[in-house]
Figure 1 (tube, rainbow, N blue to C red):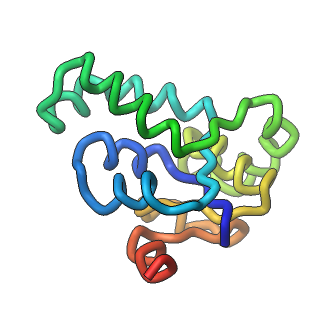
Figure 2 (cartoon, rainbow, N blue to C red):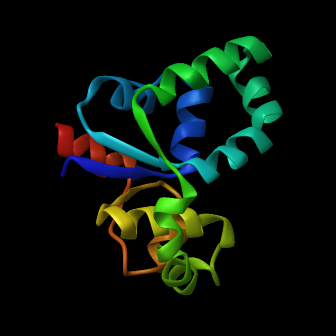
Amino acid sequence: MNTIVIDANILISALIKDGIIRRILANFKINFLFPDFGLNEIYSCKTEIIRKAKVSEKEFDILLLRLLKYVRLIPFDIIVRYKKEADSIIGHIDKEDTAFIATALAFNAPIWSDDKHFQQQNKVKVLTTKDIISFIG
């Protein structure tokens, strides 16, 4: 498994805490994918992330740019043809996650997420942080 789609909450966790998630993103040669649309979710949570991470706005921006060096942003035009299928898979659970499912479908890759709602579908494989730790072992 060398390609994994990361959920927004994985990136948010890496922004908030210098822990295992940040180390995995920065240190393992895995092709991490993130739909560029997901940046909207990151920026909508920016104030909360800054508060929880106890960083300045400038430090947030620098850290986000550093983390994105390890992540390939996927433009919407690459995943758009998978949007309808993704919506039928996850839209009734959480519309905001459609782009992540569409990215996983487009690249035939699992999603790394600790959000339980991804487990409510069975079309795309979902890996938790615990699964990723076991994998890189």
